[in-house]
Amino acid sequence: MSDTVPTPAIHATGLRKQFRQGDGTPVVAVDDVDLTIRPGEIVAFLGPNGAGKTTTVDMLLGLTRPDAGTVEVYGMEPGAAVRAGRVSAVMQTGGLLNDFTVEETVRAIAALHGRADRVETVLERARLTGIARRRVEACSGGEQQRLKFALALVPDPDLVILDEPTTGMDVATRQEFWQAMRADAALGRTIVFATHYLAEADEFAERTVLMNRGRIVHDAATSDVRAAYGGRTVTFRPPAGVVASGGIDSAWLARVREALEPLGVTDLEVSAASLEAAFLALTAESPQAPELVGVAR
Amino acid sequence: MSATASTTGSSRVRTAPDEDVRPAPRPAMLTYARLDLRRQLRDRFGMFFVVGLPTFMYLVFGLGSEDAVGSGNVAMYVMISMGAYGAVTATTSVAGSAATEQVMGWGRQLGLTPMRPLAFVTAKAAVAMAVAAVPVTLIFAIGAATGARGDRTDWTLAAMLVWLGSALFAIYGLAVCLVFRGTNAPGIASGMIVVMAFLGNVFTPLDGLMLDIGRLTPLYGYAALARFPLTDGWLPLGGRDPLWLPVANVLVWTVIFSLLALWGVRRSRSRT
Image (cartoon, rainbow over all chains, first blue to last red; front, side, top):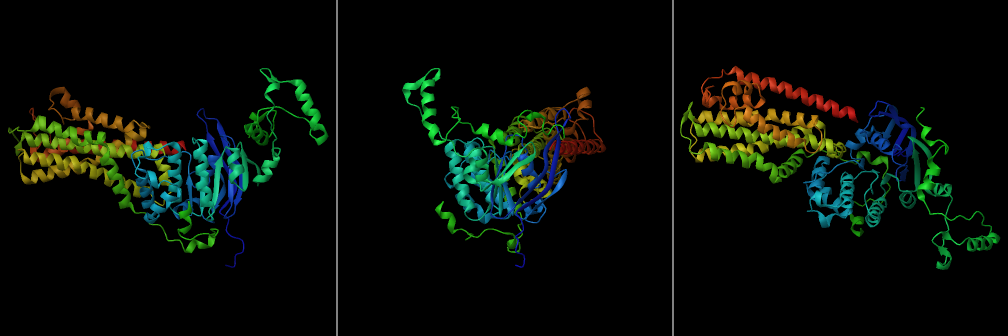
């Protein structure tokens, strides 16, 4: 009561983890990561494959021991927070048993949490009630992912960590998944998710932590991150008559430039919109030699 | 989605102070073991090798064999051998699948629950022994109904030795699946059981050089020990094993399998 500052959901300082590759060369997966997440926040961990997101998540869950630095989850050691049911996760590589049914899987995990009372609730919350009797091996990738989400909800955690939760989903199931997540976030859960889809961070997270090569390169409100890659993009479709097989008629493009000039628009470019490009621009510390960064350390 | 609002009324932002309200979770291991057992028994392909094959072989080789062996008859001798084969296949495949589940990612899922690793091992061991009891009970019941004869104490002793001794092959299954990682590891483990059953004097009586080699293989000691109350060590094709021989065989293989399993566990840990 007397404490006005609530215990942070996650408080990590100086996290570092190094792995050895197959040929014995060491690779720094996570390098000096400081992170504090307050209760109730929705935070996206954004970064390309190999940025260190999964390793960071593993350390936050106590599944991997950091080489250096400290992690506290609700003021506890991560393993203790997991055992207390305060934090749970949807893991990228977490497996399911193919010959269990959906409901049996939830029952099994609920038994281990001592929360048999939660089975119906989480099945409904993850929209699995209709396929509760289906075998896991007969479920689509999206359904299996929703099942993992249901398992994460079993202990009624205060914090849910999702590692690439929508991998392998098509657009429609992805949308459905986030809808279920959004409904759950409205109940006040703290949510941290790792993704390499810029759009997911943009749409869902209030705060975005950009990771690249094991380091946090940007940590701000999602709207700031959006601004950093150039705000909104205006696109339009030229009339069919000016588009030939070789591209757009240059005389017509010149007229467009001329027409836009009085509005203060310069440098009009015709290019395929690419989130990847914007993303790379943000994550590359040195555009000339991005490969060298991190190796020398 | 609309139904979610009614559950556990939690429109508040969850913060730290509700630590004391939260009940300490107690894993319901019995429920988990029961679900896992049901899953194992449902596996028709696996259960064919555990129950179907040994029962079939008892019916082919043991049924109506009235010739005397030790304190009983050949039918009882074959019954014990086939019961042992079924029980060993059961513990091998359950323990093997446990190792494979861990490697394939279910272990990470379990790692996010309050269950301690020792509780997991205990639950799996209970499931393995429960599955092993199925072929032993069934084949001994068929034997009793179809003319396997022997002393009552020999029956009881043989059944207990078959059942409890099969635990050794849980260690074996664990070791093989930790060493050969991957989804087909339990298949490799069960397949090797068939070979070891031939070498171990379980399927057909051996003599000469094959018997000398067989005495060194893992199933020989276990099967000979299970038949010891009946045969008192006498072999079907002549000769007699002293009691220390099967006992030494079982002890030595227990040590070997345990060391292999430990090495496998250590190796799988160092990967992460």
